[in-house]
Image (cartoon, rainbow, N blue to C red):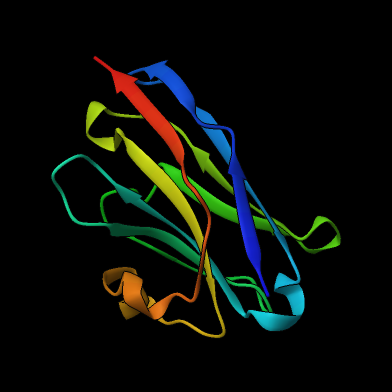
Length: 126
């Protein structure tokens, strides 16, 4: 059983940075893919970034390329999302998720992820 736990959300002004963390016990064995999704009020959940933990392969949504970086620390069973140059449109609840595998299309299919955290709120003011 994988239980992701997110932390690091908060409120920042546009142009600022935040780093989200996702600690997931057991993920190194049970999952090969960890990722971040977000959901703003009234909108569908959307993929932000994924990392194939076995090889460090990453996928990003076009809206965050060049601004967000997903990384992992296998010794700590933790995945990070470094978010730079934040924009008001980035405001959302951010969820960490895990699955046994993924590909770029998984960004568009949240239902393909098996394990979900409770979420952490990110608010960006203009």
